[in-house]
Image 1 (cartoon, rainbow, N blue to C red):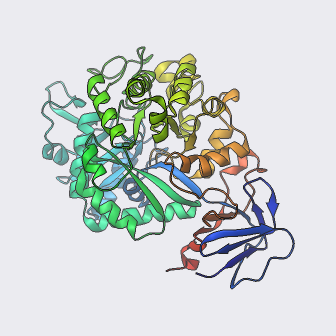
Image 2: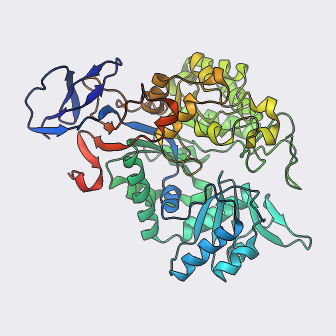
Image 3: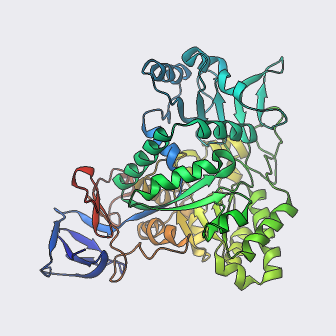
Length: 510
């Protein structure tokens, strides 16, 4: 690999200074400077763009992201009939994959299996709620599942499943769908998701692979697809089988290892009851997934194996369970030993001052999804409707976390919110609670150095000599662009180790 000079634009260096050019050598940043650039074997004309370190999305689901990119993304759609019509059109087109999602209830009319059946007949079809913790399955899919004894099966007055499934029952539907997704469709979905990442300047993602949803065969397929791309895909496998993951040579696992559910499905685990009543049969404070004793043994096993472990914890009761369990491990193994592995909490939405302080003491890292607040925060948002405006004010406390010294990194939880760091940075800067807003420099850091630090592995994320030349060129400077204009940022180029991966027509292949 030869050296390359990036010229004709502005370069945002790690110190916050603006340089005129950047020089790379063997895929790493060699120098930046003002004035005329040194001679190089290759030159990239930025054409007035701003060159930044590329982004890392610290919480994604690549296959679902790619499937939604095929056009079955119902974000913002309020009409049940429109969703049913979209499934019918896929059937008419002969599409073997009948999967869509990102709907939010209530729609203008309730959706059940019988509604999907009108569109798909006797074919299995799956419609995922935006939070991925609930879904609507067609009758053919319901019949293919073993739902006996599972929580989360909505039933009609006669006791028959309606097709609306939550948590454990929804997990059974994900397992079936993944196991029956054609290999070509899975590969195409991952490729589409990777292209989406490149298009928004993302060159590293942390894939949250839920083994109980997707099966171990799906993990092999995902890894095979990801291995063909330049994108750095760090996989977190959500399972309690520490030995199996350690045997692969991995040093991290968990991620979306559920301690609770979600607010959209009334299943985030809270210490106090929901303000709006959960569906019939659901606990008033949400769902606790794990027994304390079992979780302690799992955390001990991960610590002994020197394995970083991440957990999904949204509600305050789930966060409390994670922290008190790590504290017990720290009492046995030592605080410094726990801190050294930098365990993660995904979401960390309902963290109190006490939770934040205890997490900082343990070196627990906070993996946050800023657009959750943008989409569902505020006095009239979903969070306020679920738990009341007062409790909702104390959610997603991004600035408080960073100020307390926590390692905070950002992601999208795509497909839950879009794989788009500019949208996420907008959300950080426009938090509905002014005291929790993060400034422009902090928002950029959380999506570059911060998100990568969650995994503790990458040296990318800043423009300074010696770091990998993972770069993105954009049409405006995020440090000076008004918050309301940031989401409209256009990416003009993305590079990994100084090789261009976006746009596709100008991509360089090794």
